[in-house]
Image 1 (cartoon, rainbow, N blue to C red):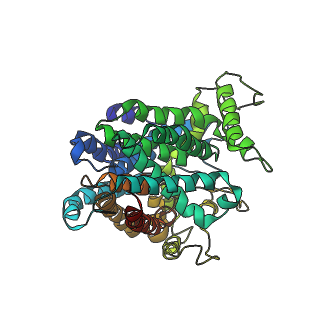
Image 2: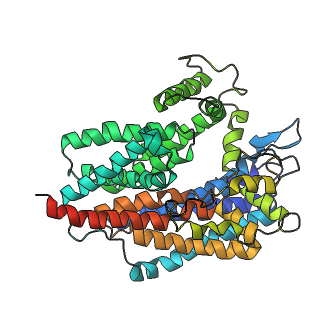
Image 3: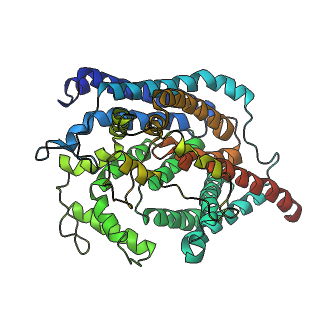
Length: 466
């Protein structure tokens, strides 16, 4: 496979660039291969490092071999967002990515054994009362459903920042209890036939694909943990569905994101399905006038290749920083401090909008564009702030962080309650495609709040329940 990719590379890619990209794919996949080969009882409850490695393998390695799909003959250049100057992948930037991924994986493995000995495993209660845990989890699920369905509640950002991840944790806890035959049939029916479908519908109705992927991956590996085997059909289905949906995602968003759209979530999901199926020739409603591309054509995949081409983002950052664009100097990490303060306490806490600033700063968006955003992944963010030192030290620190998160939240020693909640908290971190503070900043507060909720809620309920 490596030889085929290197010898059939796009003419833009040198042999050195292709070999380094193949190296990124190889190194990135090592944790996943290792995780699969381990005994089920020795695996972390959620394969955080393994999935992060897959992310880097695809977004920084595999995407390099697909850039030909973004080549427009009439423009004589790659079409990458609104970028008009030439954008390309050079040997220096792909070497930086290779070094970063190699350091992350190496530090993870060098530190994992020691960290697993010295870092405690998350613990909520010593002797969990099944009825108390169920009641606490159901309360979180109801809270999330109310947040989705009641506009007044859904417009409260402080509530949403807690109840959405907490509600997800409650669902995973009850799912694990169902798989262990700890739920009554009517409880399982409510969970599987009402709670899960409502949450999935509300998530799909947003038009964002990343939350859908994260939710699907979370459910898949919760099942893998319970069944002690990998559901390969589901694992394959997620990227296949993504590839089928993405060519028409812009048409879907143009409709469901239209100003003044008052459709319900079910109506938005139904309309989205009609648009997607219409693209593939299955007319179930009013068709879209023009999709612009033919299903299955290479051009139809230009959007998804753009979406996963984080190596191009890193190349752009390295090629222009600091001589054209000055270093950020840690500015994008400052919100990590304010994230520790709930918005309920600090109502005027500033919102993070680095995606739009990043796009304009590096010429990926028009200078006057104020709405569209470009993802700022962790590796480009490190270089944009501190250059080579930031990237090399930062990726080493990410390897250490992955080892710590796996030990504390999803260790093989974690119990049912701790493992279910832990995987709910850390699962979004495998797709490291948005700036660090946006993805990680809320985790300490969310983890602490959920811990307090279950810890003291359990103490109170065991005294009240029979």
